[in-house]
Image 1 (tube, helix red, strand yellow):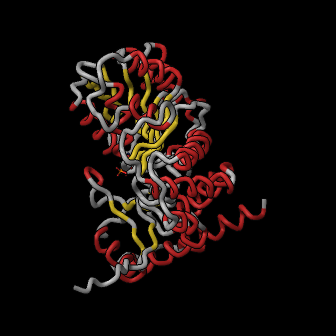
Image 2 (image 1 turned 180 degrees about the horizontal axis):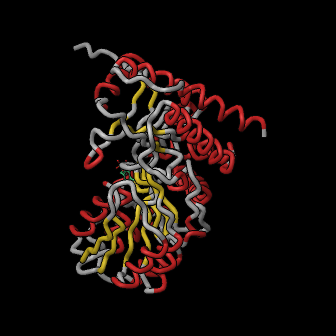
Length: 394
Ligand SMILES: Cc1ncc(COP(=O)(O)O)c(C=O)c1O
């Protein structure tokens, strides 16, 4: 039997993830594997731990990766810290907060939610009031909500949570590597993320980090975690302690993430964040020039990594996306849940966040909008170019 070779279509990935993979990462995945208990593998895991600490913004030694996608990071964070009847508070303003709620409820936790419409954020005062009223044991929020494009600042949440003795879980899936997560400075106790967004690595690994406070709670825990695979004590023993076998870690993915992190730290994290910020600002200027308004209204609450313009009246997002993928090979996605048909989701993550990609996308989007009968009042690409010119002049 002859099986034809794989031939994935060329794509420019500008959706909510995965993002474009760094060439150096693909090269790393071709290297010969060693076993998951080889001393060389643990050297690679140690490199990852060290560089992850830098992107998470933490001094915590308890920083590792879970073998699985971002949802595995979420499941690990929740299952290790929430059990039957744990008072578990969720700041709910998008899809991924709902997924956290679902996982916590499956563990039997007593979940209380502070709900807001998708895309809105929580002020310091209202976050504090909610936590002091509910006095939870665990608080969860999504720092970068991929379903809406909103950034949630966590400082007030963490301060209030610590006042009542609660731990804070933060979903950093769409921020890690593209925006400063500042885990220690913010006071986050459990942060998790994924490999395939702002780190520009294929999907398959979920970075996670625990503060000393979270580690103390984990170590004091007597009842076994209701998941073998995501049990952080067992994983710690595998990666750090006795290197006792726990599961067969995906070695090639570890090589890939190690290289993706090397690319990020070699670029310089501050420069990397500034690149994401500038490309986001240029894209927003272009979208607004074309008459599209941003769903997240306060610029300070917008993600630099995931942009959510509202669709003009009467324009069908499925038709726009079809044109972009079929005529230009560009992937972007639409909204879902309450935002279905109302927004586009445009990712500028990691290697995808470039000036060239911003201009290419704006030009292609303008053509698609025109083909669907919408008349943009001005050129998006020209407005974006002005942002780049102003940035170059300072
Ligand atoms: C904010 C957020 N949390 C969690 C996840 C789940 O990650 P994954 O799809 O890698 O399992 C995603 C995925 O897009 C996400 O955007």
